[in-house]
Image 1 (cartoon, rainbow, N blue to C red):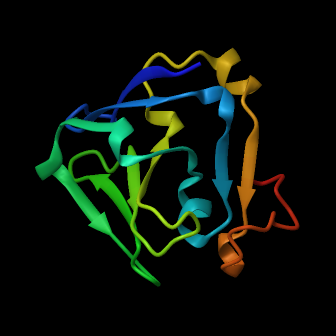
Image 2: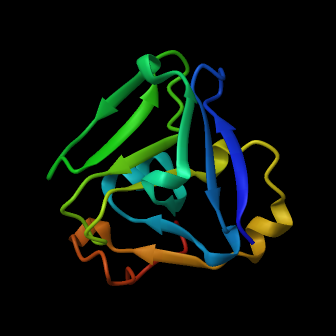
Length: 135
């Protein structure tokens, strides 16, 4: 069911809203960034994402191809979301919302959602990594 979720970084300098159906699934990637920060996301299109506060407080970290904007709060270091430019695996810009930054998320709803795994480590985004237990 489509719902509006609200979230923030740890210090709440960065706040956002996003509309999505958690039941459609979440994602985990094994690339070096996602692995190191243990990122668990839900993907939303730009029209479903609203930054409510803190744009000037975000720092943009990019590496490799530079299409993924791994944003973090300059004060607390939390990574509430990232946005991915084209070209990418979908062919359109999208936002990855960090599930851990959603306020009041129902844990039962989260645990019922399917998880897709992406092999970013090998730049094979449509493949499931050989090992996912650690993700």
